[in-house]
Length: 361
Image (cartoon, rainbow, N blue to C red; front, side, top):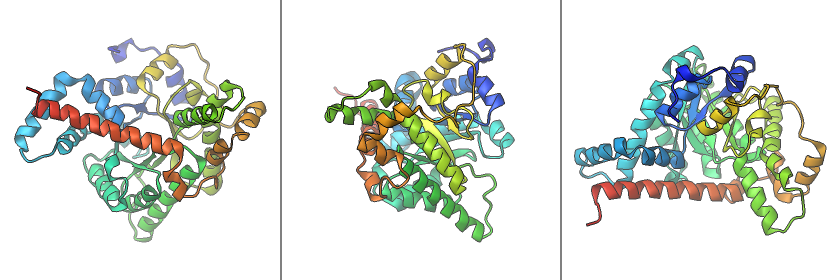
């Protein structure tokens, strides 16, 4: 879309941002989309390797010459190093758009997410080191680390080092709770040493739509006879359960809803002290509607829908706080599928760089 902020009129997103504690972030690092989201009341942004590759690929007229320039400036750099330098520069540019919001919200919002390289996912030290490096690129960068068994260790360590973490590759209540607890341990270690945590703004993502996607695959694979519409509520139900757990346990990180598949991934979660991060296309759709904002976070999912969902063992694993062990985070279907997708996006970015620095004859 090419709208300017002056063409916007107040809509449901802006109403929700002004009348509830629910924060709106944008699921993109594209500066044009970020400016438009801010006009809707957006106060932050998320990104991942797939989104970063898409942003670069859609703005080839800008980024391909820059790739060629980086390759000339750094003749020994690998394809991956060149591609990630572009991601750094795009992220720094996006973060600058939120600096005033960051100051206004004292670090709780006004942040842009960068995601650690999925190829580092087997090393907690490498993840924490890169998270610390990314955090230093701008004062309002928040860094994504996956909720894997290795990632949980890295999340605590990076938090201790002062990194505001956005937990990602997270689909279940168990992952969210363990990640929130890891953040608490990191914050407590800082506080014990007299280090400031007042402007840190950690969030724990639940990729609600990707949980829905995985359960649909499971239902088809196992030939389950059920109302397919009920599967659209799986991510919402897990998010609402995780929100209750965070409140009961006093976890300071906020939950963040991502991976949109339907409007309920926004409307059913409004009213909570959470972050909701739709792609801009979803924001435009919601804001152009005549939907009346109504806080719904504390409304339970319909009992008939919950009976269907709780009849699926894989949903129970995702829904119960002890449904997965930390070791099982690594083999949960949605985790594997998402990490493979992120690795594929990294490979796509490598290939794009290769076509610039070594074009086919």
